[in-house]
Image (cartoon, rainbow, N blue to C red; front, top):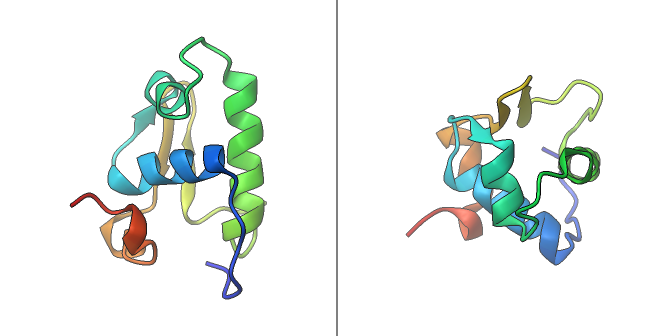
Length: 92
């Protein structure tokens, strides 16, 4: 993860929150779209948001370690240990 603080838009925050709360599990495209308030199947929006989020939090966005793509399934956040880097997003 990058050391400097990053500014996330409200939509990016909701997306990251959904991924972190489900760390280590695949979250479907549909679930992620619903979490960010786009229940319509618009995967291109999701891809763009994931790309922007990776650019903000990954050390090397071209080789992501935190947000993992699962082709035709969805995305996952690396794991429970990495989720601790984002305590404000962990479920209570």
